[in-house]
Image (cartoon, rainbow, N blue to C red; front, side, top):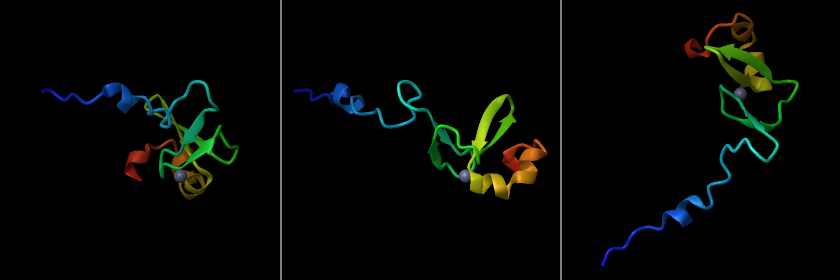
Length: 76
Ligand SMILES: [Zn+2]
């Protein structure tokens, strides 16, 4: 007798992670990974390699010079 795992039940509950449609979009900090609803004014935006990255207020303050210098976060 083959017992196959039911994939429908495995994927049926995977709605909690990173869906951009339907709900208020959440912004994830590209540095520490913390999230916030929408885009707080205190967060900083940095474009790296054509991708838009956001940083929370803590990380933005900490790395303000790096962000303003448009340097990649890879070297931090
Ligand atoms: Zn952060």
